[in-house]
Length: 109
Image (cartoon, rainbow, N blue to C red; front, side, top):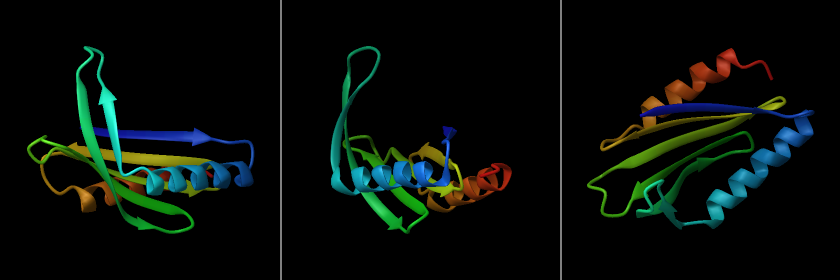
């Protein structure tokens, strides 16, 4: 599964603040419980791989999910905050970074 999202803000400052909130939130939250549309809970562990002033890479690992992991790469680019996600039962760190870079090339910040 691959997902790409972009949020546009009124200014670079607002985009930077939103990215900072995302970064701080991910760093502070090491576990979460998600409930799907059927009411089934799944537990996830979060690990930050790298964080800079404009790029955040982390993974969400499903506890008891037989290796199912969502690799996430977010970055701020001008007035835009974009994120690419690849979920699979393998290591998609490199693929996620490549998708995010290609996505960022198409976003005018």
